[in-house]
Image 1 (cartoon, helix red, strand yellow):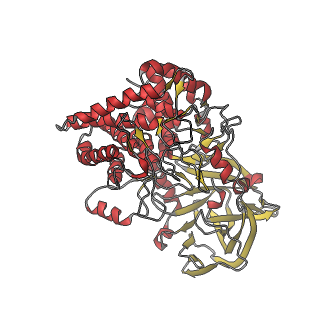
Image 2: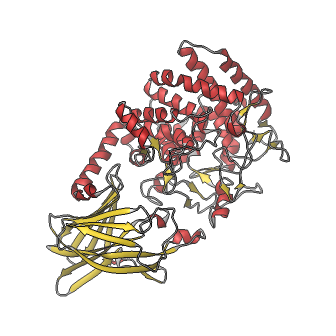
Image 3: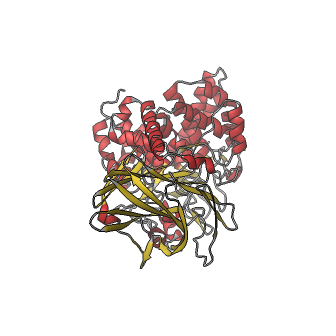
Length: 625
């Protein structure tokens, strides 16, 4: 987690009486030489993760208290629920500390008090000065009330930010504290929300029960063989965090509701990604189809069709804005793959009929040429792409104007996706009673040119890019995972005679326990670790760093050649343990390329979860053919 993303921290003091009064601070925020002054380790006896909710148990003398955190679905609300498990009673003192800001905003160092507090009938509201941020919080039941007592926790340390070379400490502000008596059978719930005062009426135990029922419903929607396995069942629950209603496109949401349609998108990763076209299409099968959420898969595909411009699917929707950015060559081609996977799972041909005009327009724009130098080379049918200052493939790191892996020219996976899209369009247009022979002709031209241009018998793998920019090597000889897609898609572009040496090279040079490296060791640009400041990290992002999502397509290609699920499952043997290592219950964005192979980047990534689940199901020895 990006530690500075927190909005509200809560300090808890528990008091009870035996022969003498005992007071312990749990989650205390007093800073001592860059650390937190807390006695939590002295009384924490158990941690449990269930139904996407964390629960801590604290033993304080004769008193045992459980704390559960739950975020009600589709609300920007947090409930912290306290329950007395053993003992007659305890007095709690709950002090909220505020860093109340957007997660990507600068840290707070203001010497003057930056908040305005108001309260009415047990409901408390904090506004951040000179912003539109407004937070409501309260305690239910109100009990002994709130004491105004301003405290500044100075220089709270964020160690992850410190390691990245960012500003890494800030002041945390507390306007006062609640005092409440906790008794058997009576839970106390601290609620913080930006949803309005109605959300403060949340009953903590009811919120916990609703969350339990929601997760149970999600598991009931999934195929039985999925939820019978503990790892895949956890991933079904984890997938729920990424499928959302777009937050900023309110007009479209209202229109969809008025017409009875759903509107859905996918958050690419937490805590700093929004909805990205590429990530959404790659993740769609694992997040929605493997989990039985077929209606939402359809809604996602429909939603993105409304945003196609000049034959391109959006790359991303910047946070808080309605206008999308379109600088991507692969997101649009992944759209065809996602539609194909949807129809394979559901048998629903009506969506293709609905989207066929949009899909035809996409192909036409690519043949004629569209934005960012994206277009077909008429000499070989291959798809070229590139524009100065832009990063158009999934290897899209850019810092201070430096595009780390520009890959301008004809990237290998773009040809695989382009060929697959053409073959699918040939099938779909024929099934719709409107056959178009040009799709098949162009696909065959692509296949012929690809096998002449990309296979290297000397390297025993595929070139990563051909026809690069002037001044660069015409063929990029780097061994990268992008070549896997030439075999993994429904319509592989690579001749089968080359599969075994290519997969063997990828296995030897790129495969790790967590996924595939983005560059083979030994290359001059190879970076074994993802650490340091932004420039250092972006230099490693696609230059060796391991991405878990790539394992799905590696295994899909591997099983086509080696249909031994038990052997293929060994490639995934370490992934279940990761659910306990970084973000509990989810899968990180990336890992270092060398031992100890630490998880890095976003703590929970949509396509990491999606492709891990898909790969796990593909390698189930008991799965029917």
